[in-house]
Length: 332
Ligand SMILES: [Zn+2]
Image: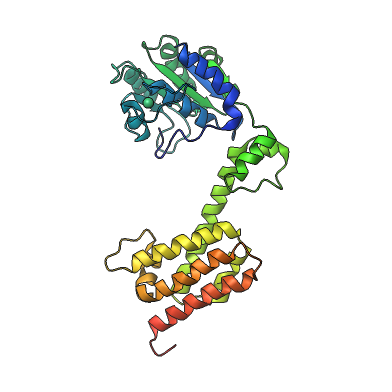
């Protein structure tokens, strides 16, 4: 599956649908072609992964889930399972091409390494070109023994009717807003101002937040690098941070402070980019250690009603003083 994919905790609004699937798994009556459908953001891939994981496991739990520890489960989690074949658009293209389908169908006919049989994963299935879809029909109609083909699609209506009719369709339901609210809150997402309609697709909300967070973090990293290079004054560098969501920013600050400390160590291979690592080495470990005590204080203050602007500015001012000291030893 995708790098870093894990079965993860089951999504609560999938429970009824999963019970149905678990019954099929227990009775060894899972269809050979399965089309996982549903609105974007309801967790179709999560459901599909859970299913594939269960199909590849040799010691499933009573609830029908993969055990997570058998040889098959371990290989799947490591992304090295030999019996999974994926069919996705290649080279950043949008369509799945007919040559890809030929290779995919061929792979599915090879003898599986495990007795659990081969898995074909097609995602998104609506990316199949017409000729690719036609080429897939035969494999879908007469799949090799023990093989399961899982298709995932946001737009089932865009699939050829001949593909649809050869699959058993599993429509992942939208979340109940109350269930979604609780689930999102447990993931540090505040659902207070989200209307019920958007709450029905909770994963879309999280994906959006992560994308926004990624952009913010990039900006904060830039501000920090400029501060370390003395190209911005601490009060302006603090401006963006003050407006940010506190928890996210404090978390970033805490991690970056540790990253800078690591990068400042002799030969320390940091996880930060070049500009930040350079800055960290200039400031030096001793000063960064002093700064890290201030950072820890900020983390403690975040939940209080201290003047947040002053707190954020002071952490930047202190760092800029260390930068100045390191750059010009007479300035202190
Ligand atoms: Zn297992």
